[in-house]
View 1: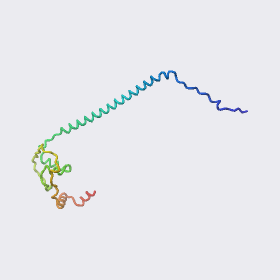
View 2: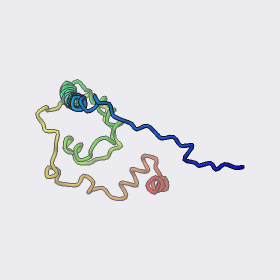
View 3: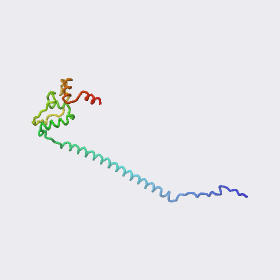
View 4: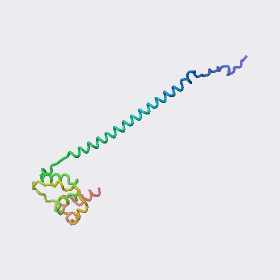
Length: 171
């Protein structure tokens, strides 16, 4: 004969979880301790952020002051430079110069640039002369007297053909 098996017979009742009696008595003190720990962490975080900001600002101020002192210590005696040294420097770095600035300081009309001077006279520079020029100081275009024939003659003297020039311009 078969006996009926009931599933409820295999389940055992679970014990109820009960809180310890000390839990409620210590709950207030535990909450105060946790709040104090959180305040200390917040204060430490604020102090750390303040330290980073102050040190960053101090580093920036230091760099600004250091850069200013480096720039102000550069001195050069322009009167000790010979004309040949100056011409050599200009030949090597001609692309770095502004044409209007050169014309302002030289105070000459544009002339044939293929002629070179071999004099070794020293150049005297007035330190009180302003190194800045206004557009109103330069009243004429330095290239207004140059025509197409002059340009072609210059290119011929430099050994540049019109085809090479067009290729260079067009890329």
